[in-house]
Every structure is written in C-alpha cells, then in structure tokens.
Image (cartoon, rainbow, N blue to C red; front, side, top):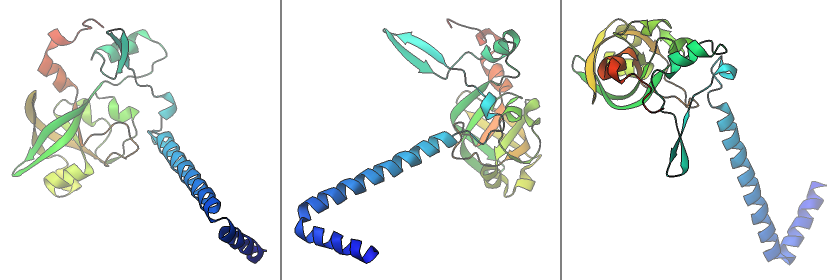
Length: 219
C-alpha cells in the first residue's frame, strides 16, 4: 500500500511538477506555522504556572489617560498593597515589589558583580514559589538581609554554603549599603514573569525616599 502511494506521488510529481511543488510548499509552510503557533501558545500558558498559588495570584496594574489615550503600567503607588489588604476582605495577603532595578553592584571582598535585583517585602517568598536551596522564606523579615540567586552566590563566594551568613555591599544609583546573605534561591526559571539575581528588603526603598514620598500622589 505504501509502495503504491509512493508510486502515485512520484507519477504526479513528474506530470505536474509546478503544481506539486506549490502544494508541497504550501502544506509545509502551513504545518510549520501551526507548530510555531502551538509552541508559542504552550510557552505563554506555562508562564508563572510553577507557583503553587498561581490560581490565586493577581498583579495590580494602573491605567493612565494621556492625550486621550489609555496607557497601562505596572507602576503603582508603594502604599497600594497595604491599602488593598486593609480595605478588601477577599485579599488574604499582598506583596509590594520594586523590580527591574538595573546596574546594581554587589561586592564581596575583591569580587564585584553587576546584577539585576529587586526590592520586595517580607511576604514575597511566602507568596511566590521560588525554590530556596539555603535559608528560609522569612529571610527578608530583616531589613539588612539579602537573598541571592544560586549563580550569584557562587559568583561572589564560590559556593552556596560559603555564601550563607556572609556580608556584602550593594550599590545602585539611588543608594548603597551593607547586607547579610540570609538565603539562596535557585535561579529564577525562564517561564517566570518576574526576574532578579537577588532580592533586597523593600524597607530600603522606604528609607531612601523617606516617609514624605509614601503617598497616593495624583493616583
């Protein structure tokens, strides 16, 4: 049966070469597009699905009207999380973050690394399922603590074990200070919408801007 079908295909190819090639090209292109779309859809569907509480997690965004157009942003006021938790009964817990802090230098003795970090509150590790290889989820309860990714810990101290409990210095355009490595997490997976090489306490942000800037503004 297979031999017969192959023979028919070969005869059609010899008799209608142009039509055959056009059909073959169209079929191949269609299948390739379908596979690529399916892979893209699967990748999008997998985003953040590793969080144990994924079905209960929501990200608050804000719509700004500028020149008659609506622009949506992830930048909300830093006091929003506490206000939502206090005023909306359905919210069990809220976490405030300042992500995407670029050009942050971490220093340990003679080692200096440029990393991408984030400022997060003490609830962060309890809400999101970023796996810790050392330390515990209460690591950011103290303002002086820092949580490093596994690759960052190895880059600064050689091993994860040597990193835990050690001191380092951090510096970015808006401030600098000292921190103690209280925990080490596995490098954040590629299907995470949140990415950082280390986590610092959000209380540092409050110290930098001061209480006078912790307000609603015109929001």
